[in-house]
Structures are given as C-alpha cells and as structure tokens.
Length: 172
Length: 172
DNA sequence: ATAAACTTTCAATTTTTATTGAAAGTTTCA
DNA sequence: TGAAACTTTCAATAAAAATTGAAAGTTTAT
Image (cartoon, rainbow over all chains, first blue to last red; front, side, top):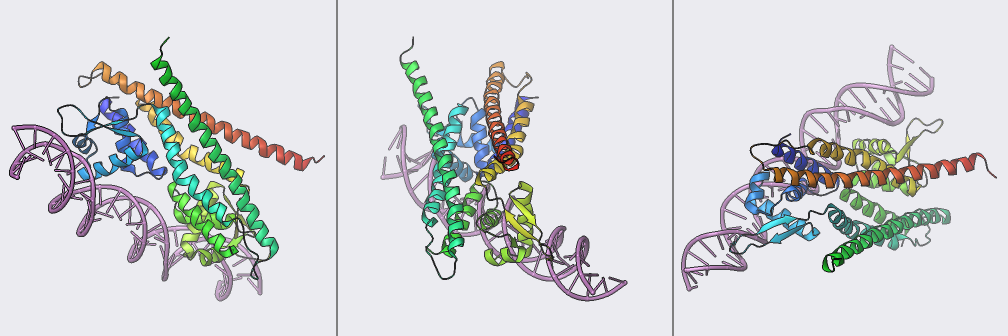
C-alpha cells in the first residue's frame, strides 16, 4: 500500500471511531491527520488535506486543544500558526479518559446523588420507593467504582510520565 | 424529592450520557425507563411515559434487545408484548463493553493491520514511511492492549455470573 | 376465513448537528 | 498609523439523524 492511501484509510477509520464516541467525525479526522503528520500543519494544510473550510478547521483544532490533544506551535519568522498532535498514544488515551470522566461520569454521579432519597408520597407505595432507591444505589456504586478506576489509571499514567521525565533530567 | 421527579431526572441524565456515547438519546431513555421500572412495560406504556411514537418505541426496544439489555416478556392470556430491562448493573456494563468492543475496537484494528506496511515509493522518503509505520504500530499495540483488557473483563464477569448461577443450582 | 389486537416498516417530515464563507477582529511589521 | 497576514466569529445553509404516523404485516381466537 502507498503512504497516501494508508493515511486516508487511517483518517477515515479514526473518524468513524470518533462518531461512535460522540466526537464529531471531522474533529476525529483532524486529530488523525495531526497524529500521523511528522511535522506540525498550518490551517491551510489541514483545509487542503481534509477538504474542509477554514472556519471548520479553526473550530475543531481549538476543540482538540481543549482536550489537550493538539498544541499550537509557533515558528520564528512565521506569522501563521502550526498545529501538532500529541504523538504518545498512551498520553492520548489518558487525556481522553480524563476529559470523558469530567464530562460524563461527573454529571451522572451528581444526578444519582440528587435523586437517591425519594420522599414518601400518597402516590407511591413504600416498596416501590425502596426498589427505586436500591436500583439507583446500585448504579451509584458502580459509577463510583468506574470513577475510582479512571482516577487510578490517570494517576498511574501521570506517575509514569513523571518518572520518564525524571529519567530525562537525571540520566544514568 | 418525589418519585416521579426522581425518575424523570434519571431518564434525562441517562439520555444525556447516552448521546455522549454515540447511542441515541431516545434509546438511552427507553433503557433508563426500563431500568427503573419494577415491572415490564408495554409499547403503550413506553409511548406514554416518554411521549414518543409507536414506531420509535419499536425501533429502540429492538435495538436494546440486540444489545442484550432488554428482554421481551410474554404474559399468559395477553397478546401484547412487555419489555423488561436487565437490572444487574454489572451485567449491563459487561453487555455494553462487549458490544462496543465488537463495533469499534474490531474495525479500527482491522484498518491498522491493513495499513501498517507502506510500500516504498518515489513520492515518499524512507524516513517518512518508517515514521508512519511506527506511529501506526504504537496505536496498534495500544489497541491490542485495550482489546485484551476488554476480553479479560468480559471473561471475569462471565465467570462471576457462572459461579453465581452454580451457587443457585447447588445451594449449600 | 375473518376480525381484532398487536407489531413492524418506511417514506415523509422534523429536529439536531455540522459546515460554510464572508465579515469582523487581531497581530505584526514597516 | 496602515496595510498585510492571519485568526475568529457567526448567521445562513447543508447534511445527517431521529421521529412520526399511517399502511402493511403478523398472530391469535372464534
């Protein structure tokens, strides 16, 4: 397979994966493009390679910077901005996990906490109210397990990066 | 809080979570409704409680059955069908993990395998091709790790259910 | 066989989400 | 300061996804 064809297939595949994850196809494609580009790319480069508009590139690149997956790179003597993707896939996974934990786990845990205590009412039997609270309690315990697991993985990765960094600083 | 309000909040929250996961809001809401309903519900019940059309209920209930999250329940002497949601949240999580592994991990792994070998070409330096293959290789290793992890969790859960089942069969 | 009671399908419609592109805004340099 | 080289915004538009509802299909009972 030729490199260009391989790149296209990867961008397409990563885009499809993205849409299953609630990330827009284009955002995932911009990420894919930057992931496999050795050098940082300008807005124009991205426009051309993905055939999308300037506004669209700008929007998606900024969203990716919010996730921490892409960085702005300035070159001396160049006015325009270049963008480079985080290449360490381990770090990419950690950043995504962190963001999804914040965006998804936290809101549902808040809701679960709020609705757990159901007041007795004329409309509802004691048993019904208890069954509801039990179901919610189970979901809550599970969400807490997921949250602690995510926290552990994120922490482990941060330590791993820290130790890598320390080794770089004090070689030998 | 009153039970009805609590139920609505849960259905809304679960729906929002669903859309972040690439599942339609309504499908997640039907799932939420069945998750917190003590009894199985009919199509009409779901239509009324979520204020959606018959066709929509039918579509989403069948999708949920495909995922294994909802079961059809027939009552003697009743012609219509009732639907009940899997209540064990542990099992719910396993079913979702299983389905997502099949739908998402497997396709991207296939693409990664296909594009790894890039042919040398006049257009591309040796170094460029190697850098590409290395990036893809890293992503591939990571995907394999995720796949093995998912398989382990699914296996562990299946064993857990099996052992629970065995205990039920041979108590004492 | 027929009717009643359901479920399923699918073309049309509505709603939501993504995209464009031109105008406005910003930074840099002479 | 002004103009060039960019980036950002956002109202309009396009595209995609979800939803409806009525018609067709199926099952069951008589």
